[in-house]
Every structure is written in C-alpha cells, then in structure tokens.
Image 1: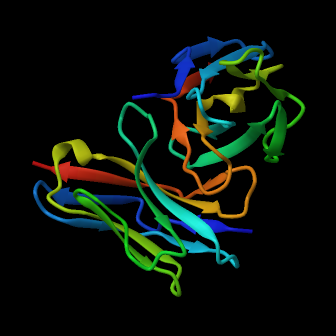
Image 2: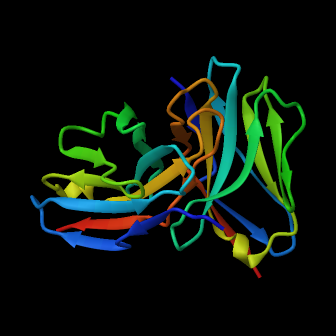
Length: 114
Length: 116
C-alpha cells in the first residue's frame, strides 16, 4: 500500500543551525503539507503546497521556514535558524486533491533543538 | 474561523467494551468533511474514518462508527469491541469542502486507554 515516508525519524540540532526535513509523498498525490505537533499538544497546520508553490501557510510558517519540491518525488521543509521552540514532531502529508480528500500522513520526524 | 473541540483529554475502556469519543466543531459553512485520526505511541497519524457533511448516513468502518449531528455540530466516534491495539490518541479534524488547499484543522486530541 502506498505511503508517505519521512526522513530522518529523529533529528537533533543545535540552536541556530539549519535543518532540512525530507518527505516522499504518495506518487499520484498533488497536494503536499507540513504539520507540526509540539509534545502533548494538538497537530497544527504549517503549509500546503501545490503546483510548485505554496497555496496556504499559517502564522507559524514565518520567514525561517521554507518548502521545496526539488525533484518529482521529494518534498522538503527547511528551518533556517532553529530555535528551542521549534522542537516538535513534524508531519508530512499528501492528498490526491486539495478539495474533499483526506490527507495521508507520514510517520513524522521528531526534531529536538538543543 | 473554524474550530474543533475535543472536551475529553482522556478516556478509558475495558477490552471488548464500547467507548464513545466526543468532538464538536464550529463552522458557518455547509460543505465540509470531518475525520477521525488515530495516533498510536509510534506517533504516526492514521486515518480511521471520514464523514461528508452532505451525507445524512453515519460513516462506518468495521468496529468504528460515527454519530454525526450536523445541526448540533457534533461528530462523535464510537469504538465497539475495543481492543488493546485501539489504545492511542484520537484526533478529530475538519476540512472545509471548498478549500483549495486541503488544510485540516485538528482538535486537541483524546487519549484512549484500553484496559485488559
């Protein structure tokens, strides 16, 4: 069964360092997402991406964040200068279409900023 | 703005019994979709069940069913014959039907404990 895969599963980084989280969405899906879950809290939307551009972003997704689809399969989230409060579980998701279709999530990347 | 509320931070159920998890939402839209996602200790988000707002019939997936009350803006999840593997955090989520982006809005989650 097709699935969304994320690497790495756990990343530890020094405060102020750049980090790139990687995702391979399901191959026939057209919409891609990043969500964040701070430990013990609810899942929060960060950004959606379609046709090689951001279609919507939340207030959390400031200038420190960027997304890219560098080739036909990968979808990345970059945090330029990590802060302690960026420590969270980051989920990549994809859906066939933005409207009316559910998102399928990857297993998440746990980011720890020290 | 749409909001999703899960008022039960924790629930417990005896194995083989039935449990209902509550979810309410607030929206002025008529076209939307509702989901329940399961997050086991592995932290992966797994889709459990989906409900289209235009459908009056409640969705069912094996032991999982929903009670969708559109007027009351309520969307509860019933788990029948609970199994140890059902222990997880459950999130209710809302998707605006005419949204072009597919952005999901999640509730705070309910942690379900299943007792043997």
